[in-house]
Amino acid sequence: MAESLISDAGVAPGDTVLASLLQHILSSAAVSGLPTNTILTAAGIPPVPHADSTGRVPVSHLERLVCTGVAVSGDPLLGLHMSKLADPTGFGVLGYLRQACTTLQDFIEMARRYEVLVSDIGYTSLRHQPGVTLWCWDCKTDNPLFRRQATEYLLGSLRTIQIRMAKQHPPPILRVLLRHEPPSNPAHIAEYEHHFGCPILFNQPVSAMVLANEVLKQPLENPDPGLQQVLEQHALQLIGQREKAQSFMDKARTQLQTLLQQGDGSREALAGAMGMSGRNLHRQFEREGGSYRQLYDEVRLEMARRYLLNSPEAVESVAMRLQFGGSQSFIRWFRQLSGETPGQYRKQARGE
Image (cartoon, rainbow, N blue to C red):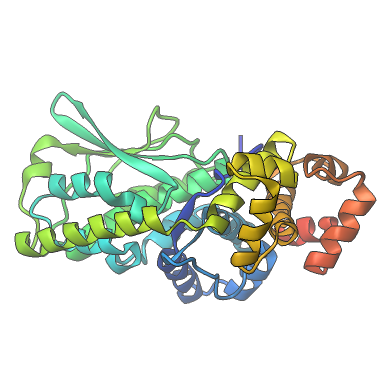
């Protein structure tokens, strides 16, 4: 079955990604000749996505960007093609750690510890089998198109970086395993094989690069243990800062997304979820320079766009999901906030 934009759910509320990674992907798309402004507009994302105090943006921005990019470009291998332009600096401190680690196994361990500094999209793991090790990456999203593109971009980027940093020959990969189905065009499989330099197996239990055990322990080019230690300390500081930086508004936004999905996004429900009275909730919003109504509209609009893009549901059903009395009130509200009707947004975002 061919992949589509349709999904019952996308990324989890509150998941974020480095703004610099999103910008790096946009720059790669522009270099490849893609109409990035058209894609951003269709995805409902501003030309310069606003990052929070930790330099991160919602993963939903990246999800909409990728799904819309596939629709606009007509390129089913967009993630793989963008990975060929990947650069370590796009991955923040984790990219710099790759340049300092002594062995590939050291770097994979660093990825397992600190990949949350890049995104909340997925996680790295190692699986050991006789004579080989599977370097796995699992994407958390329920959107099949985004999961496919994100997986191919991440694994493809790791391969690109290995090739660029190798003095002579990059570490050989025995084979690549992908959970999703093969491309509908069999000729595209040659592109995977050319990039990774090995056979590609689809419909597998995990997505991974399979490496001989000895490859993990071979010295990498220009290791710098001193720099690695400094970068690790910096990574730990960033994790600590991220944990402390989540503001009242961040927490309220995450709680409200969850409450709306459960069917009750009322002010009273939010106050209860935040562990405070309605009066204290109102005062806290005032201290933050915002309001419940403003946040409610922002969260509902973001969720509405996601449902319209990733769900086959009729506009009436989306309206009910978001607690509108009927489709007409939803259409009026959506047009007032975004300047277009839900139907117009859905057609443009899907490139129909």
